[in-house]
Length: 346
Image (cartoon, rainbow, N blue to C red; front, side, top):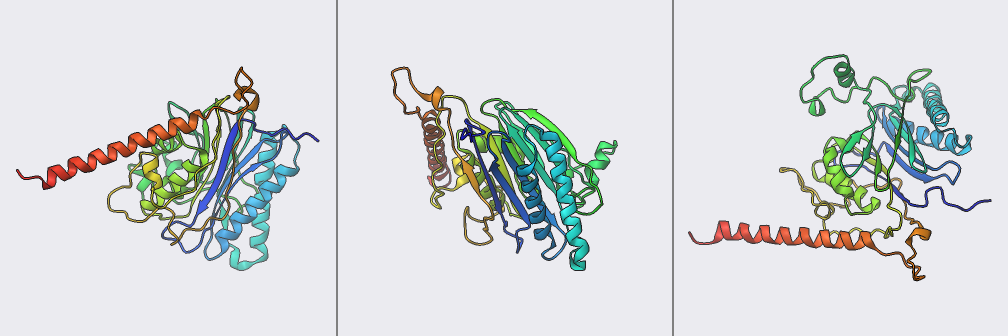
């Protein structure tokens, strides 16, 4: 049996958080290495349906997708994802029919299979997939919500991201006998990031900030930055992310440094909370990690130097350290000038 990793130059991580205003986490997030034949699975489900129902729906869908993909034929990504989401739909619908108290439950589902430099994405609902490149952050999926359906039919809906009806879903897993599944495919260049997330993230963090969070940081660090930033801005819903980055050949991917309460994650990324929102990164209140996984790998053949030195050069670590020093210096200068402006005599 081959032991060759599916993604020799990729790092990935999944994280889900309760947020600051919900009592229960009804999301699921997965990042799983399926081996050389099947690649990597990324998955985010956002459950809905009253007390307990949403959590049950998202967990049933997650388990069904994982089992389907693990046991399905390799190198058939589109067919595999379609079948996996239909299986998830059947699992949630059957459970709701057996228990009348769960009759209204359902879940969104966005899933991706990444094989080498290509990604196949399946989507139902309003959880999203983004591709982050050095030049832009591109939303790959379309939201299945009432407002976005109206926009696609030609209506003008101002302030759609903050509209009170923005969460009315028109398509989800577990409600109907069959479900329409959107399929997408994209190519990932070295350095590109594929990010899947629930609306608990996009409600507070825009896509321009996604790219800044991943700049010169490991995927694990960036994912924690984004979850922390959403919580700092209110954490109005559960927050879930599954992300993968193709790393640049020949560079080391350092292990993430443990989170520190003394260094807020949003400052590490050069991001700031919006005025009027309090909170702290990584605080115990409302902070429940359901599933987290990350892999750090590098191309060992490309990382070796010509003179036989087998230690990969830590380019990413040096770049990240320099950026953090620069950010710290700017913050200190800003504090000094603020003090001089407000407290120095006229």
